[in-house]
Length: 94
Image (cartoon, rainbow, N blue to C red; front, side, top):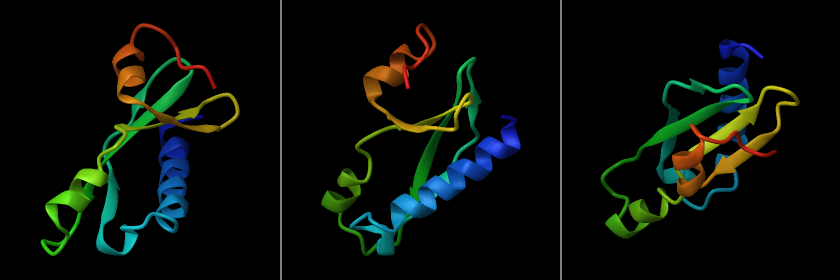
């Protein structure tokens, strides 16, 4: 899977996930540049949201750092903070 394919899959994933997110109408997730690893592409994102979203709601938006897409089978996996820290040492298990 090349970079462009990974970005396309990541955009589709975010659109589908945002349909079910309780604050999706108040925010927009924007992908940052992907990072390529041996087995996957890693994506994180930032939120764009209007000032009307409360600080407490904003805190709920930042529960995980991002997600990975496996090169082998295009499976998407949410990445925890601990996994993100370890990603450079040990490949993620899908």
